Amino acid sequence: MKSRFVILRHYGCPQGEHYDFMLLVGESLKTWALGDYPRDGVAQPAKALPDHRLEYLEYEGPVSSGRGAVSRWDQGECEIEQESSLRQNAVLRGEKLLGEAVLQCDEASKEWTFRFAARRG
Image (cartoon, rainbow, N blue to C red):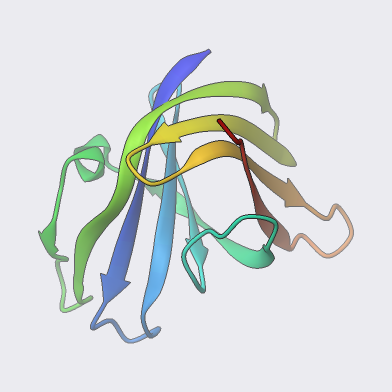
């Protein structure tokens, strides 16, 4: 399924600087907080957040209620290859990233992991 994604750098917030990975799934903007920007072959913890408003696909600027500000780190189109409550796979074609993003939730701990694998050429 063709879709869109955005990665926002979220700074000046009480939780500390992080990156919000947002994936448009149907009419929902699924969101996970990452401690760092995606890097090839590096798995990192991801915190599932409530779905965000679709406006965040285009938004940069202050976040309401004193929750810092966001700036776009990357954006683009994607192809969702797998979507379930425990796993999201998408091939990203962004301005910076080209490759596969996999979000996997451990069923026992309910903790998510994000992994990006770059595609060459």
